[in-house]
Length: 420
Image 1 (spheres, one colour):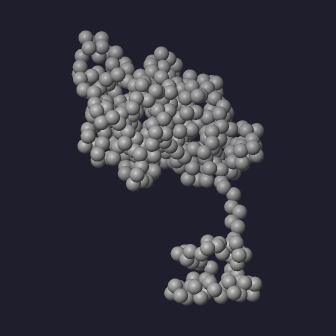
Image 2: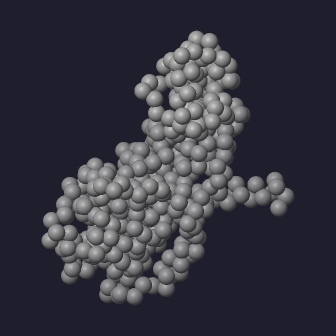
Image 3: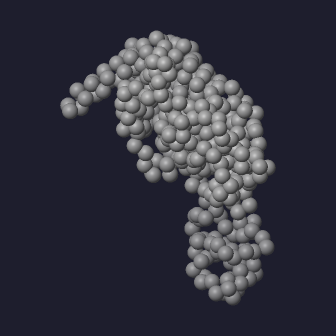
């Protein structure tokens, strides 16, 4: 505890001589030095009543107001880059308020959104660093909206990454916040973006259709291999990043550990909802994330869209997840159940179909009587998300091209100003 000064000692002697004397004798008998009473306190001395109730201690009232920070975005095709941005934003304050740009504004400024407002709300609300969400936030922070943030939502700072966020007329979307001196910047997470993911999906599905046109060939086209290799090279996972996303806590000695596994590719609202339901069934949620090879074997050569460590970070960012197994086996064995002290194994009713149905991966937990099938709250899957993009193929190609041109122009101007 933090105290104003040592005057409480003399006040205690004057007003509570017997009580204070008794405490000093007790301290002496316990072999405690009287220097403990210089404002440090007696951490291991248990008394039948609180000293503060006696009026002896005058504890400082910090009165420190919690810092509220605001970060907005479309958060379409939610990925670990979004999660890391929100993690950094939360670190700049005590409470993180997230603004979700409306579907209409996204369509007007960037092109059609892949996910609806309700789906994006589930994803953002499910992140462990988010405290509050404002729906239908404007794409451009005007002075009017900025005043609303300051007065209605008590926001102290507006946060954004160091990547460009330009309006259709080429102006900075955060100019008003910067002008007000209430703007803070975080580092953009390299190697991933919604634009990049849309490109991966379009490339993957194009190659899949090309493969089908050639009598269902089993060998992946060379272009597909090169595309996947480039994406792998862009994302370089580190143990530090995994630790930043992790809770850092293990299960208690008598915890009921629930296990759920899957690919968790293109992490979406359906994943969040089923993880939430699974977590409600126990004290600790352990999530198994299948390796890229396992996903390809059971889903096809053009999956996964996101690679193992990308998928792992997306799952770890979810507030309902306590721990993950990176590269978990397809089949759940008795040894695995014993090793992780698993009490219950669950699986959702909505899931991608496996191309290899010879083995039931849940045979062992079913025999042991610890398997449960959970009703999936949403029918969205990785495939349905990919199909939405293919259905609006031309619109998303134009969207990606527009985004690429804007970013290229921004970085060229930035390079020119810096003189590099």
